[in-house]
Image (tube, rainbow, N blue to C red):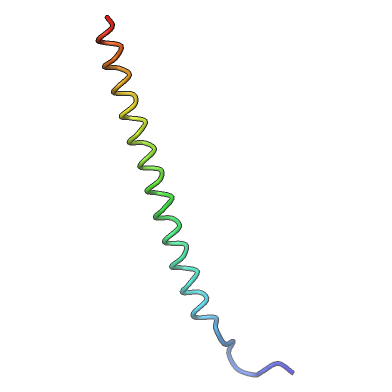
Length: 54
């Protein structure tokens, strides 16, 4: 028979899930910002190269 009362680890599991989601979102955001920075840098370099050729 199941135990009576509240479930054992639900609070810790919810807290862990919340913290892990926060961490995952932070990593995704950092990767996205890094990609945008690299794209901007590549675009700037390509523009400067095209200006030098003309």
